[in-house]
Image (cartoon, rainbow, N blue to C red; front, top):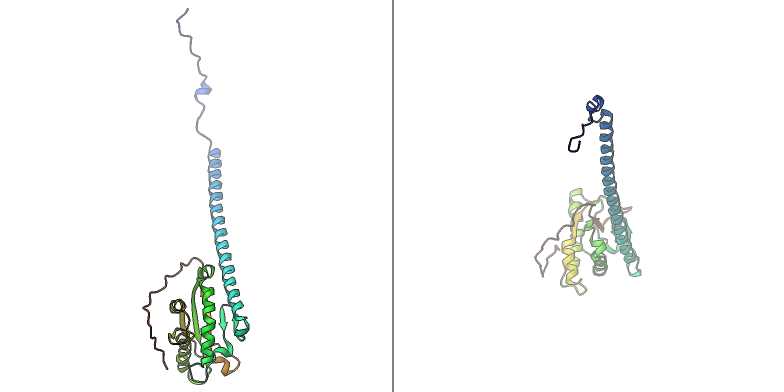
Length: 236
């Protein structure tokens, strides 16, 4: 008859009792897939990080090498015969040697320093070199005459003399004021007594410049604010 509900189909006993939980093996498979995906993502992130580090390291090394090449180009000029660039150091040879037990220089040697150093500063100012340059150390040395501590002080006075020569405002060939300002913030004087001896005493009574560069990941330091002194007094 119309309007009568058709009898519902009776579910079989097997269908009613069929379990709906996934099997243990399927669960472990799903977990393994998730683990592999997570590991792949982590490895990709680590690989990309290492790639960025290697790229930054390569950029640093190439930039520093380029800076030292520029310095060597200056040192190889005919008017600077005797200057040598070894690694990150600049050796002046006889152009900045001192007499025994003394820390003063002749006018000729002072003129050389006031002519050579500003050219090095031009390289230091270049954005690519400035990015990694930390400071320039003026390292003084001495021969073995005298005690270690005496020569330690003497070698420091020799490195200090270089700064006195460069910062002397009364010198007729003095560096420009911007150069002198940069020297005061970038240069550091140090003494090494008679460490790093040369083959003879005369060559050991010297100064060298050593360029130091920042390590990878280190931020560039803000230059200190140093009050300007129009009449710097150096030891006689």
